[in-house]
Amino acid sequence: MLEDSFGRQFHYLRLSVTEACNFRCQYCLPDGYQGPSSEHFLSLGEINTLLSAFSGLGTSKVRLTGGEPTLRRDFLDILSATANTPGIKRVAMTTHGGRMAEHAASWKQAGLHQVNVSIDSLDPRQFAAITGQDKLKQVLAGLDAAVEAGLDVKVNSVLLNDFSDARLNRFLEWLKTMPVTLRFIELMETGDTTSFFKAQHQGGTPLKQTLIDAGWQPMVRRKDAGPAQEFFHPDYAGKIGLIMPYSKDFCKSCNRLRVAANGKLHLCLFSEHGIDMRHLLAEQDVVGLQQFLVECLGEKHATHFLHEGNTGATKHLAMLGG
Image 1: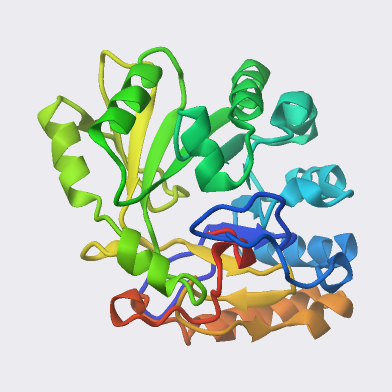
Image 2: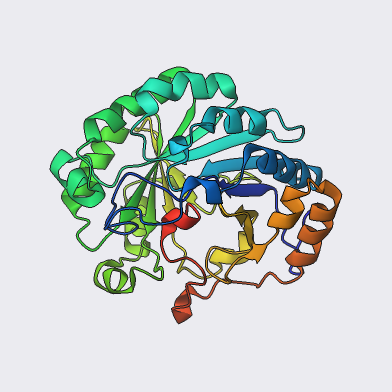
């Protein structure tokens, strides 16, 4: 089992398979993707070695992320390889959802259990302004296809300063009949978005109190769950989650490690600049990689350094999928 010096155990791997994305979200890639090309990212063989090493050390959940992971032509092969790795019991992915209506059923068939989709507004014009793409209709159709395919669906929405009661009420009305988990995420500062963060950051605590006052009740957290505090209400088909990285003790329950598309290990989304292990992946050295991972965990800090404005290697969230 992977365990750090603070007694935290790591069952959950977030694996970025590409940094590229064809959306231009204000808080991530407002000018579009301008990073490295696909040949710089992990190959399917390297991914197989990585999965074998992590699963052998107790990893039971893997999230495939990006960028936009479906931009990889071999994404279905990566998904299938992940689902068929012994020891991996739950496979999730994060996507902008633009291709989900067409592919949700095939993803489910390949072994996907859960999909997380970013929707920052249910107003088409506002959605287009935030993402740079007028595709809300396609994304919502994708959600319907994912639910119909039997996938566990979560919707991510970033809290911004212009987040109004009207937008919240529109989401709440939608959740009355939509059986998904809607997660509101505090905006996080990255290297390229400092000015935007200062202008738009809004804490999640007031929203949490609003939900509690309206009768939303906390849910029990799964062992392999992410950092969200989740709530349910008997009058709603959907659930609500809050991810508040600036809250007290946010890192206390950390259970996940990250690997970037370039093969670097990130012990935290924001604490360091990535630890190179590409040579071990290229050599298909599973045992050597496992020893490397165990040693690296001794360097993991108790918390991130976001409160100090230290964003580590994360210039934008597409680098590591958040």
